[in-house]
Amino acid sequence: MRVTMVGTGYVGLVSGACFSEFGHQVICVDKDASKVEALRRGEIPIYEPGLDKLVAENVAAGRLSFTTDLAASVEGAEAVFIAVGTPSRRGDGHADLTYVYAAAEEIAAALRGYAVVVTKSTVPVGTGAEVERRIRAVRPDFAFDVASNPEFLREGSAIEDFRRPDRVVVGTDSARARAVLRQLYRPLSLLDTPFVFTSRETSELIKYASNAFLATKITFINEMADLCEKVGADVQDVARGIGLDGRIGRKFLHAGPGFGGSCFPKDTLALVRTARDYEAPTRIVEAVVAVNDARKDAMADKVIAAVGGSVAGKTVAVLGVTFKPNTDDMRDAPSLAILPRLIAAGARIRAYDPEGMTAAAALIDGVDWVSDAYATLPGADVLVIITEWNEFRALDLARVRSALNSPIIVDLRNIYRPEEMSEAGFTYFSIGRPP
Ligand code: UGA
Image (tube, rainbow, N blue to C red; front, side, top):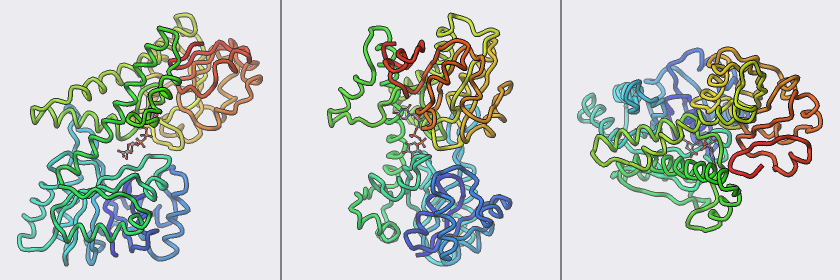
């Protein structure tokens, strides 16, 4: 099949590359000429394990290409995906749909034969209907459909998630559009992947409900962690103890510094706004947003408490600043709240992250960035682990201890066992576990 993917951000680029690997002819379109040039040279603008190889193989096989020419790419396409950004609108938290509608109007003008226009970006309920209305306004007599097909991939494991999703959700009332999407995802139906065919509005809501539910799970366990710290219980055992109940499930119950990233913060906020507009407020999700925001600041206070109540004039060694491992993405990372608060309280920060330092340096002033984990340590008064990159799990603890000025570790991701840390001579603070 011939597929056009409009937008070469995370979702667009990964989906485009994976559809081409399924055997389809995929053209990825972006307005940013320098980005398209870089992609043509094989340079991938984001850090995502395996993506460079996947892109190179499919470009070499002649199935994947990049262009700035949207009109030419749409000609002959059976499916045209809109995978452009939907950032939070400044001021009100609603999803900003400017790029989605601009893409829809450009696509409308370029359609030459029947095509399904598919929204893959995360878009609020009703966006598909509006996209259809706008295309119809440009091409009143033309045959096309607009479907919703949200994406559930996670950064850092995006390719695997696309290849083996828990489900594929397709929202459309058109049998013709359903047939096109079924054909497009044929390799997955051969793997017995469940397909949820539903209405466009339902499909749009499934995406927000999924992310809000996962964000709620994380926030729930984070609050349990705070309670564990007060009563001397262990949150990891609580998570295991409740998660083994199949109705609850074990995943997404890792307590930490609060969720971040390009999706959960933005999507929970957008869902809250939509629900309020329709006078059906999602009070649980509103609480999740507020609790998670407050948590990031509370993490800085936890560090300050660990060093005796003041970080003024002290050196804080920091490992990991991205919102999670295996990405260079800094969007809404907890570190963006934690580090400035520590700096404002008088701390000197020396930090290292395997992939995120370039992006982080542009966002946080006054941090001394160093080139490896051990270089953060000499003379530091406390070591803080914010992101659980694998390389931090295997540090030489004797070397860490001798380099630090005082052997205090605040581990916001619980990557070490408390017993092992006290045996190694550390005063060790983690999340929701007795010291
Ligand atoms: C998330 C969803 O997991 C994807 O299914 C979805 O497609 C994507 O958003 C999206 O809407 O595009 P992502 O933001 O890449 O994916 O990352 P996650 O692995 O979900 O992590 C989000 C945040 O939650 C991170 O800050 C992570 O550290 C935190 N988290 C996650 C926890 O604190 N505890 C957990 O148990 C799990």
